[in-house]
Length: 447
Image 1: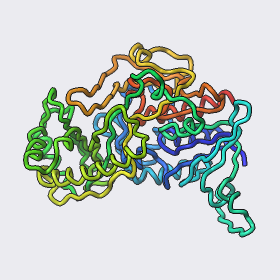
Image 2: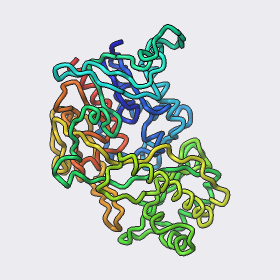
Image 3: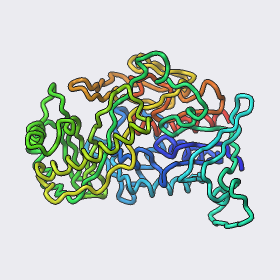
Image 4: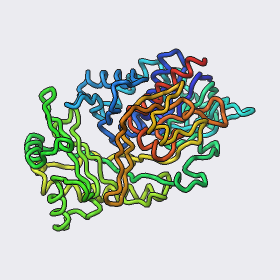
């Protein structure tokens, strides 16, 4: 079996790349380790998507079509500030399935690449891990043939012209033993951001909560609420930073004093409504305590953080029920399947995009995205987080998606070739969509 393009990772960037490639005539295979597509948007409950801050976006077609399809089934709204990226994570799984079918993309779920075949510096194909039936690649019919040897069923070889790493953590580059920027001798590159474990609470009286929080907080840069399609939609936030004036500060401090939550539980809090889920809110918290020099891809660390996060969520839920108006009958309805990782492995590609490139708005011949999103660096130290707004637009070149070692290997998403500070601006959902779409269009031009 041969494909023009194989994409490892059906997350934000991977889905955009696969869908666009399929529309452009590429025979495309998308491989995803989970039982559903969407990556951090679905598995990590990262909703809504942040706005890029500019109207001069490129490679924006997939994003717009995805949100339009979600809107048709009640899973998307455009917020009062014009951000189209407010979406329902569960309905997103359904829409992504439909869009891959629409674009004739073959999708294999619950699978990953086991081995990569290379000849003279060129990637020729891959073997998949745990591929239970060869028929999954050929038709909708499930065949059972006792004469098929089990080892062949589990190790189907697939040829490809291009291989794209959309895993978020550069798992394909890692399998090939390629160097990462975060592993180089330059210590400044060995930094990571704090991790979140998101969750959803349901059974909330949103009308009561909206009225309470809007009366409590007059800062409309922090707390907003509006009615869209007869639904209440809102957002509010709080952090433990004492260089800012937070309306929720006395509420959180009372919860700490009463022993309902710990001080660490209060370090970061952000909440958003969800289209089509009118008694529910999505929480961008807790932000978990981890040394910034520890790679979040370490399995032992991830295991500890998951347990730490679930305990924190339980405490926070009890806190909200006691101190937030409208939460009296609320309950935890979902905890993310995976951690919200902002940065882990970053490839050392053909071009290492720098913070100077971003701040100066350096012009490139072949950009894959344009954005004005701030440099957004979270810290567990009080008053040490960074949100550096940009006065001008910046762009990312296609070369930051290219492997130096293999001419047909690419990376998209948060693992691109960018230094620590610039990656903190490039990692948001719209930019990852643009990377995937932009790469597919680039390959079509050079086909």
